[in-house]
Every structure is written in C-alpha cells, then in structure tokens.
Amino acid sequence: MQELRGKLVVEKLKEECLKRCESHHGKIPTLAIIRVGAKEADISYQRGVRKRFLDFGLEVKDYELPEDASDEEFQKAFDFINDDPEINGILIMRPLPPKINEKEILRKLRPEKDLDCITKENIAGVMLGEPSAFAPCTAQAVIEMLKGYEIPIAGKRVVILGRSMVVGKPLSMLFLKENATVTVCHSKSENLKEITKEADILVVAIGKAKFVGSSYIREGAIVVDVGINMDEEGKLCGDCDYDTMTEKASMLSPVPGGLGSVTTAVLAKHLIRAAELQWGE
Image 1 (cartoon, rainbow, N blue to C red):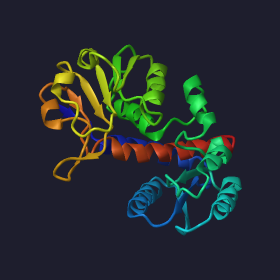
Image 2: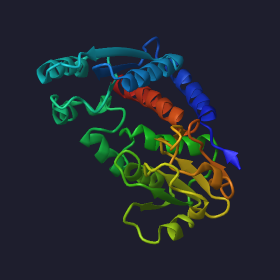
Image 3: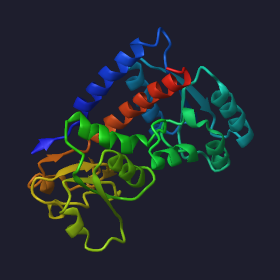
Image 4: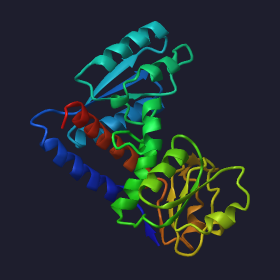
C-alpha cells in the first residue's frame, strides 16, 4: 500500500505558487487574518498559516481584537480590511464570539476576497461550476492530493462519506467537474458498506474517529481520509481505522501527515488567484 502524504503535494503547489508570484512584477498577494481573543488553537493555526505563506512568497497581515471587543468595534475593523485594496484575501478565525454578528460579516465579505467559500456567491459559484469561484480549501485539497499523485479521476466511481458544506457537497461538484461518477452518503444512507465497496476512490469526512475500516472498501481502493479526531489514547487520528485499511487499500492518506498540510497550501494558491483576478491578470 502507498501512503498519500501531503508533503509531496505541498512541494508541487509551492513550486507552482512561487513561479506565479515571479510574474507579478514585484506585487505580492496579501492575506489578512482576523482574530478575536487569544485562543491557543487559533494562535497555533494562525502561526502555521503565516509560516506556510511566507514560505510561498506571500504576505500576511494580522489583525487582532481583544476578547471583549464589541460588535461595533469588530464591524468597523472588518469594513476597513474588507475595503483595503492592498488586501487580496481575508481569513476570519471562526467561530466569532456570540456578541459579534457573524451573519452580517458573511453578508459583507467581498466574494473576491473569500478564499474558503463562506459567502453565498462563492457557494453558488462552486455549484454552478464557475471558474472564478473559490471552493472550500479542504474540498479542493482532496482534488489536489489526487492530482498531485497523478491518480486518474475522470470516469472513476467516487463515493464521499459526509454531506457537509465544508467537504461533502462542494467536493461532489468538484469531482463532477473532473468527470467522475459521484455518490454522496451520510448518516441516513442504507446499505452503506455495499455502496462504499463500489468506490474506486473513497473520501471519508464524517467526523468519527476510526469509524471506517477495511470492511467498507474493495480490494485496491484509493482512500482519502479528511477526518481530524482524537482517539481514546489522546492521539491524533482520522475517520479511518488506518491499521485495518492497509490490508485492502492500494493508496491511503494518513492522519496526521496527509491532507492537513495540503489544505493550507490550497489557501495560498487561492490567495494568488484572488490577487490575479483583482489585478486583472
């Protein structure tokens, strides 16, 4: 069995991004990260994004508001960032505190700066197959992972476990765009194992630690594990039972070391495309 490790794909995306940045005549695509408070998980993720983006030749500006910031204060800061022509993409550390009107933020966020498909315009664009729309980074990362390993998608039978707006639904559209035959399963699906065993490519995104084992796949299937969970021993794991899956899968993405790093690299790729669209390039 071959592991689908994120490092190989990230290096390919990095090379692509650096090459595209060289053609911008000194202009640097810039990301704004907006954070309220000082949650350690948010700070850690923000630090990781900054490191990756700088490595890709991009710029990051951090905007931090105190935990007790009012809705009015946040809206004012957001409007300034949203309207700043020097900012090409915006990443909001969500969920925001209850006192902040998040729906209003999503309504105001410029679609051309929405890199992770949280505005209605980009959601509709992905469903319609519009090339200018930004898909959710995690969903796009699945496609980038398969392409990075030169795995054929066209004509293949793909089964996706999970129907969220972050992965399942938009990913089904991305696979259809690649001419795959797609089935989306969920908690109410009957005869689940019979369906998943038909898959050439199985994508697991159900949020249940080690839920999917080898009994869900046919011999030689390719499996992409999107899950990020903690097991009973407090260790990071995916939605797949990795040890049993190795018995039958021909290729499998591990957790950690698989899709996670690709997702951040996709965010960087989206920033560059956003900047190019805004610059008319």
